[in-house]
Length: 147
Image 1 (tube, rainbow, N blue to C red):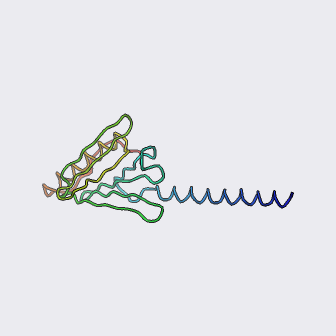
Image 2 (image 1 turned 30 degrees about the vertical axis):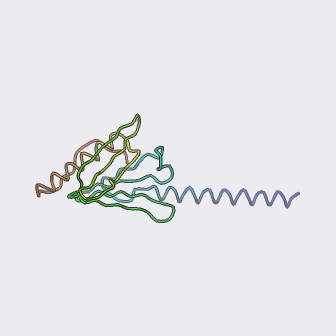
């Protein structure tokens, strides 16, 4: 009987270690990938349960960053190539679609908070205005985004 209980203890200990490693891996992959204006999708939204998509908006580009089990997927659009920003608002969360001037598929960002979606659009519009005026890119003042 002791060999069976020892085996069971080892199996439970191994399962706990594997679960802890998975938890840490998922937590590390979900951290902010850059400094600045990074907007993270909600883990409650479809496709973002384990590794939420993040969007970085800089004065020169928009970067969509999606972590994966191994590696990541990044898509970057320069401010000069953004044609429009569309927000679809649901009951709790919003989807943001960033259309390019020459591409076929927009960047689709699902599951952002409504305030973050509005801030993303405001930042893009401000940075585009500054870019086309040739002036310095100025950050948009606003409430903290809770990142």
